Amino acid sequence: MFSGIVSSVGIVNQIIRKNAGAVLTVQGGEGFSGFESGESIAVSGVCLTVRDSTKDTFTVDLSTETMNRTCFKSIEEGVSVNLERSLTPSDKISGHFVSGHVDCVGRITSIDHKSGEIIFCFEYPTEYTPYIIEKGSVAIDGISLTAFSCIGNVFSVSIIPFTFSHTNLASRKMGDAVNIECDMIGKYIYKACETILLSGNTDKQVSLDMLRRQGILK
Image (cartoon, rainbow, N blue to C red; front, top):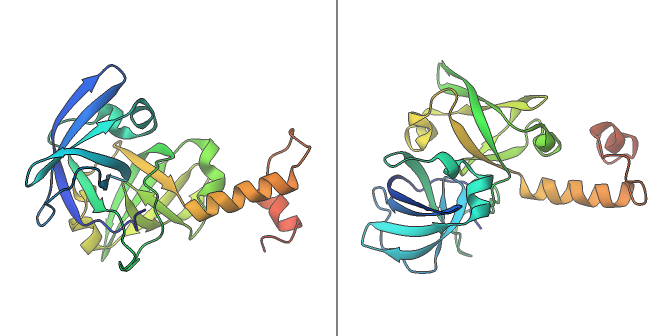
């Protein structure tokens, strides 16, 4: 479990593709070292398990599911990745609960530099629209952010200068693929509502209008 607060920005040292999977070696960023075999690290929002390490690098396996579900399918050596160690019971949760299980790959459609903020706009697969809501939490490459201007399968986030300079967003450009994890609690609630409201009726889908009619949303 993670919080979506990036600890460091690392660099992909090496990627070795094997059949449908891969082996990834990452150089930890400043202060991000001393790895233990078996520990979980979120790499750009993907929960991965350390299998080998040196003082400042760690190696992980990428399964077929990970390659298919995330933007690691096209990752290249030398790119920046966001790093976060798993939470401990004593850690402060400044973001939101992030599982490290990526839902889908989105793409940056615009980057707008404004005074005191940078607005990123993302497009993502339409089947995930029920899980990304106005002012709801979303993890982009492992960064805990708040979605707004949610129209169809597009949403925006506001990035403050500190987040921009302390994550891989500083090196992102329009058209880049990003890992998206929808709010975990929201997904559970939606699934529960779907199970209760649509029991025995497989031809319908839960919609925001249906939830409002049932008094679940206002």
